[in-house]
Amino acid sequence: MNKTVNLLGSTGSIGTQTLEVCRKYGISVNSLAARSSCDMLIGQAREFNPTAVCIYDEDCYTKLKNELFGSGIKVLCGMEGLCTLAADSNADITVNAVVGMVGLRPTLAAIESGMDIALANKETLVCGGKLVMESAAKKGVKILPIDSEHSAIFQSIMALRGERGNQFKGIILTASGGPFYGKKAEELENVTIEQALAHPNWSMGKKITVDSATMMNKGLELIEAMWLFDLPPESIEIVIHRQSILHSAVVFSDNAVIGQMGVPDMKIPIQFALTYPERYESLSKPLKLTEIGTLTFEKPDFDTFVCLKTAVEAAKIGGTAPAVVNGANEAATALFIDGKIGFTRIGELVRGAFDEIKSTDITDISDCLRADRKAREYVNSMSKAELCSR
Ligand code: MG
Image (cartoon, rainbow, N blue to C red; front, top):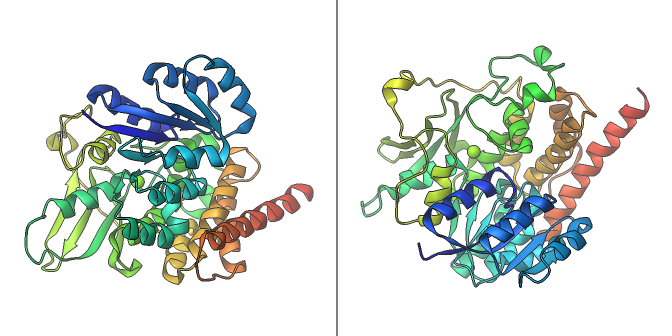
């Protein structure tokens, strides 16, 4: 296929699957960026021969530069390098698959240079959705979702292109419920990181897998959907669907519901974002509905999953509230992954930050960054005090 990509977050779960799709269809790779997996990035650079690579962690820069010396590949580092690669218009599209709100500035840089974006980095829209969507509209840039639910919504809307009056009025956002589905708060107090990382349906990176266990992921996705599809939070219904076969659906003005189904495999939405508006054969397995047998749908448990409840409240308040909730969640989840706090503390700290830090309007990126910093400071100071008093 005659297409070229910049790929940010190339060594993560979405990144490596994007490269599988590139390999299958002969999509060229103009640039690759990773956070700190230097050896893996070197291997990818040797295979795909991009014009430039970037390592976010500046401590790895010298090693990367030495290893790629003489290859002709330009080597960059840090946030500045990430933004340079994101905005490199020698590619047709920039895939943003980095984890966390650190992806916001590269997204804005890519839009600024007129690059279409395949977006897997939902935190970008949670923290800076207003800025991203406004500048994308101004520059005429397409934002193609890679997140499976949002890809499903996008595909459902696209399926009706050409029909008249196909206004949609709502979204059914499906959620697997994660590994702790059906559990109550007291049963979650002593769960381990291994249990939190055992997702029933999807194979993903650590941060998003913990987000699925707390159900924060679905709260972030509700905010992501609000921005991508221009709907208020009240028009988005979160539904627990344990089998992860219906990836989400759109409700039209006549109450017709159009959804997208498939096996839970990220290669389907990744490929669609890269080949859109064309569809090609896929590396994923076909869906056999008779082997699945039953599809179930239930209401989420907002009382147990405090992160979900808080994210939905933040969505309704708007302004910097989603950035606060996201920043607190990133900090608390990192502490949980490091074994420093228990699982239910994530929700308590996210709630605490949300209650403590007042939401303000967003006029530029500094508002998002400030809210994010305050939330992280809140979480780190609260947990430090706890660790000292143990
Ligand atoms: Mg998703």
